[in-house]
Image 1 (spheres, rainbow, N blue to C red):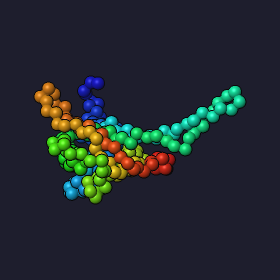
Image 2 (cartoon, rainbow, N blue to C red):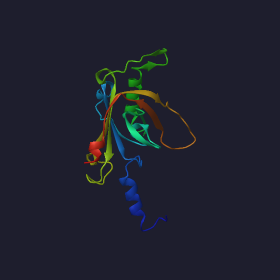
Image 3 (cartoon, rainbow, N blue to C red):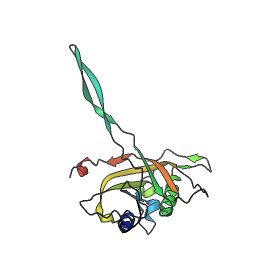
Image 4 (cartoon, helix red, strand yellow):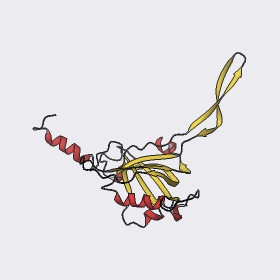
Length: 192
């Protein structure tokens, strides 16, 4: 790409992608005891977010000299959320997630529990919004997103710590892994 008379279109495209320029246009909205206390909305654009997908089981039904796979009345699902966000723009979220993690474990004191807190006691509800071009073309406008997934009773199993480096000027990112107990199926929303 040469910079010349067409450079303004490239600059405009870069500006329109937003400050983080992440390709995966998902917003995650976090709510819960340690998050609702903050005045700003903790709705952030994330990368590497893949919604968990259920898989229905099957069993083999033998009939004469052949067999047929039939569905079972059960399914399996890895109830894990993984996502990455930029720390420089979302430091409040990082602090909130660390506070939430302290409701189920504290490595410094050696304390841990198997009790998953409700939202009023420190649990987190995560709502995922997907970018919908039918609502508009601006990925920075929150009105152009619609909710498609809601995960409840989330708790953090892993969150990366701060990693200071002088090797490059890339923005620091935080990777988070959460488990959840309950969710709203997005199938009906996606088919609208």
